[in-house]
Image 1 (cartoon, rainbow, N blue to C red):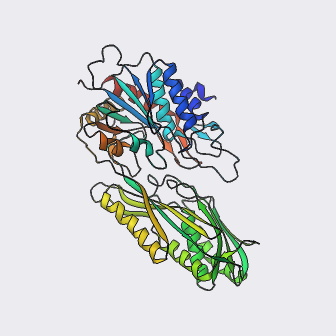
Image 2 (cartoon, helix red, strand yellow):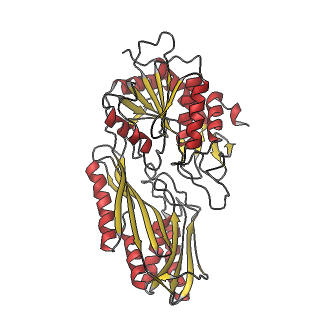
Image 3 (cartoon, rainbow, N blue to C red):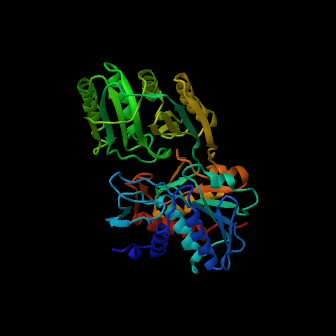
Length: 480
């Protein structure tokens, strides 16, 4: 079945058009031009602001002029992850999609349903002629996934809407009214290299399912960088190790699925036996949740120089000590992760070390507590630490008029109560709200699984439910 034949056809048509346009974070030039042309071709007022956000305005339909104005908001960029055996260039190729039962997925890459389905939904409303709605401002932001720079660059006064509907959550029975803030923690150091004085061993961790470093951080998924660090540490018990190279993980907001390292050890046979014992334990630990996990340990060769044993030990101890996963659960909201960290990327090449982290929290002081823990460990190991990209969380307002309206419509339409929640992901609402404090905001969306990983997939029946819900919300927006 072609995507164009799935209901609602208008959304899947626009999603297919969007997914034909490359749109990696920080490289959104093509998709900005695509959305700008889309708005202009509809004859709607279309502007691109200084940072690249696209704003398209559509007047109210007949009889809806006296309703509160609405901002429909989604982000244009997508997380670009692929399986290691897939040959794909996110900067030049469109996403290759397929249907698998009730799901739409991509062939070995992320799908871009986060947040492409939100973008496609807004496109569908803008081009419709039979959907009642108040005055609309469609806000398409850039770079949500790697810095929130679109939302951060949005200036006061650019929007006039009184209600913001953010279409960027991933459970169709949830109405989201709060989210975590985040901060990037980057650890670096440059080391002198020398000739390797032992035998060369290659360690590889792969086959993990990865996932969203906010929404999935509490699920116990394996982190390839952390598992690699455990293997290093085990080897230190009987061996001196010289690190040659590490290549683990990728984006800050994705739980690392793969990591590989080349090391030099005095006695490769003894080292391999030692870490193989731990390998068996790790495979047993993750047997029920990481069914695809593979750990390979083997002799190899390398002509590259290595770090000294002393510097290598510092890195191994630091990697073993960096906090990864849930830091604190919320004492106020049941089952909500308050604070966490993702050790997202570990790279050692030619003596240059980089460790990328993303620390999240719905409490600002707790966010910095996590970041400072990482900083303390790294500085004890003689490394440099930089904080950047900090953005605020979004404080819930459960009694707002739009939340009450959406709860009422949901119950009437689906004969059950929605879950009104806060999430541990980073949404742009907190940042936008800082410049528009009087704007009522809520986030919702269709069901998406495996976001930020090549297992990402969008549920077809859920998209139908989401489309019907969105149209009913717009038709019932309160009076001014």
